[in-house]
Image (cartoon, rainbow, N blue to C red; front, side):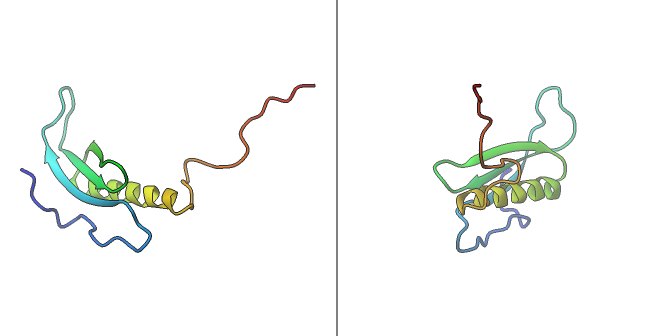
Length: 93
């Protein structure tokens, strides 16, 4: 069932560590409906694997966006969902 997918972007840039390696259809989880796909992002210490409902194209678009965010974190660009800076500090009076 796992065949190469033409939707996967296979040419990472020079600073990109993570890349989407595959998006394959998997069986629907118990209690869920619709078509489900598993994505695998290679790079770093271990592959990032996830499953999502939708079309193959939708899941690939999600996984490609996640790949971009992971690479942005590695290059010091930070993550749009994880702001950096001062943390809440307790101020004693």
